[in-house]
Length: 95
Image (cartoon, rainbow, N blue to C red; front, side, top):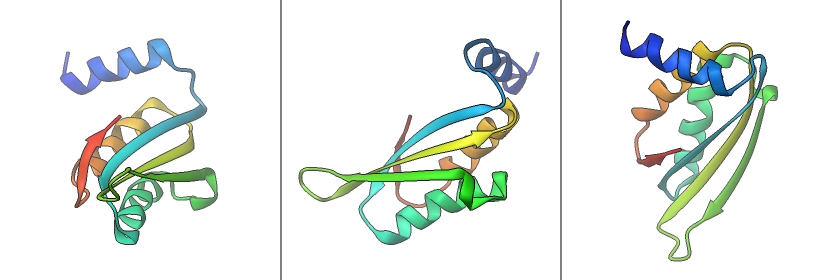
């Protein structure tokens, strides 16, 4: 069993598809960072209208938390989005 198939099995065991999924990405505080995070989801999902975005600045203003709530049709899309988010410039943490 590959690591990806193991992750898919675990994800399917705790989440129903299709359905909403929440990604939280913490990184550098800039408008470009928000755009890059959103673009990662759009590349996989294709429809920006299926994405709800909220942001919160850290107390010092250096970092930004971007929360994406997206409608996903299958577990594979969740892993694909995480894969793209890992390489977004400025990402410090993924939840």
